[in-house]
Amino acid sequence: MNDEALFPVGEVARFAGVTVRTLHHYDEIGLLRPSGRSSAGYRLYGPADLARLQQILCYRELGFDLDKIAAILDDPGTGPVEHLRLQRERLVDRVERLEQLVAAVEKLMEARKMGIALTPDEMFEVFGDDDPTQYADEVEQRWGDTDAYRESQQQVARFTKDDWLRIKADGERTIARFRDAMRAGLPAHREAAMDAAEEHRRQIGNFYACSYDMHRSLGDMYLTDARFTQHYDRHAEGLAQYIRDAIHGNAERWS
Image (cartoon, rainbow, N blue to C red):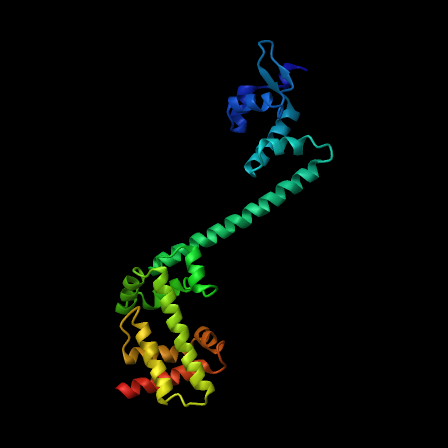
C-alpha cells in the first residue's frame, strides 16, 4: 500500500483525541491493527482503520468495554445499520439517565431555595408524588418579601427527614378529622370541625406564625386556587369548602 494514503500513528492520535499509547494498546490486543508500517517501522493507518477507530471510540463513549467492542466489531453479522442501532439504544438509555439526573438536580436546587435540606430520595420518601418544589418560584414571587416567607425559610432549613415525616403525619391526621366530621354531617361551625381548624392553624406554626386573619386568607385560597381545592377534594368531595368554613368559624370563635 502507498505510504501517502496512510496516516502515521502520531497524527491519528492527535485528530482522534487519544494518546499514541492508546493506539499501541489497541494494536497489541488486536482491536485495531494498522494497515501498514513505515520504512522506519512506525504504525500507519488507512481509511478503513480510521473508520474502525471511530466505531471503537463511539462504543467506548457509550460505556462498552474493549472485549465487548471487539466482539461487536468482529461479528460478521453486525453491519453498519446494526452498529447504529446498538449505538442509538445506548444513547437513548444515557439520555434517559441524564434526564433523570437533571430532574433530580433541579429538584434539589429548588428544595435548597425553599430551605428544604433533604436528598431527592428523602424528598420522595416524605412527599411522594406531591413535589413541594414545583411551585417554589411562584411562592417566592408572591410571598418572598413577607416576614412569613422569611420565617418559613429559616424554620424549614432546620427540619430533618423525621421532622418532615412528623409534620406530614400530623397534617394527614387533621385532614382525616375534617373529613370524618364532614361525613358525619356535622356543620363546619360545630366544635369538632373548628377544633380541627385550630389544630390546622397550629400546624402552620411549624413554618411561620399564623394569625387568625392569615388563617382566614389561607382558607379562602383553598377555594380560589384550584390546585388547593383539588388537593383537599381528593380526600372527599367538597372538603376544601368545608375546611374553609371551619377555619372561618374557628377564627370568629377566637376573635
